[in-house]
Length: 124
Image (cartoon, rainbow, N blue to C red; front, side, top):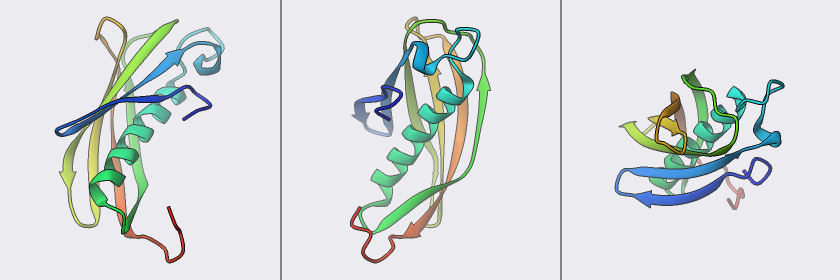
């Protein structure tokens, strides 16, 4: 998260939000927000929210993630928001939406998480 400048900004009833700068460390070669950076933001949001819901005795790990890149962004800040679609005992599904400063959709996606018992001695 620190490497890409991702910062959590809001935890609300049924959502988690974070921002990420659009700058050289998150650009692809043409100077646009890299699709992989958007996916990192989406996975960070979904996994973090999933971990909060699962609690201290569980670990969540990603099973699948998808992303649709809808709009190019060259600079500024993007904001990602994740919301649950399914919260089960063994799996969770979260949707995420990343928007530009004008709240136009930049990327939308979904992440599926496995909920596992936390390994003994993991401490995390």
